[in-house]
Amino acid sequence: MCQRFLLYINDIISNFTLVSAVVDLACMRDAMNKLGGDSNKINPLISVDLVIGHSVQVDVARSENAVQANMELEFQRNNERFGFLKWGSNAFNNMLVVPPGSGIVHQVNLEYLGRVIFNTNGVLYPDSIVGTDSHTTMIDGLGVAGWGVGGIEAEATMLGQPMSMVLPGVVGFKLLGKLRDGVIATDLVLTVTQILRKHGVVGKFVEFYGEGMSELT
Image 1 (cartoon, rainbow, N blue to C red):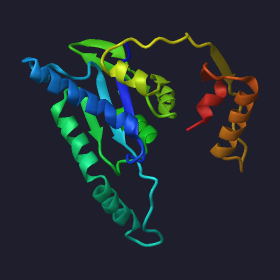
Image 2: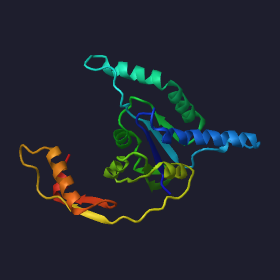
Image 3: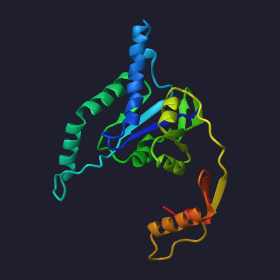
Image 4: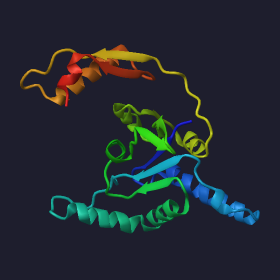
């Protein structure tokens, strides 16, 4: 079972799949109450990080207060949804909601949410993650195994259901030498991407190695 689950909401107005995951948990609690049970027992079984990303709607531009003005409008438009998600973060265990304006999901995941190693009661075990954003797997750069999933798989994983997958093959990419003057990181990335696309790496792990790794920052 994976250790973490990453939900991403980008343009919350149109992306109901991820909001519905929290709605479903709330409905389960209502049902538990009606049955006379303890609704507080209804929680995600694994750690869930829900990142509310950037909105695609821009109303104000080319001014010093553009970012702040757009954020205020976004909160006005999505006040009820944001309020519901805030309630969810307080009501459920194992759920962290990263508020709007914090950054893009893959950046937030890499810089703040990625744990790499868990330490539970003195027991160390590696971090792993499934997520609903196509860039979830960028976390692999930290040595954390990451998989992208769809909405149904996402909710099932939250509730502790196993996620089946084909064991990926591994493609090695050997880096030698160093970049000459005038060649920037973007040039390297585009070249590597072109080579990998020609080789065919869909559904595979790519591992970079070689003496050239020490020249990268």
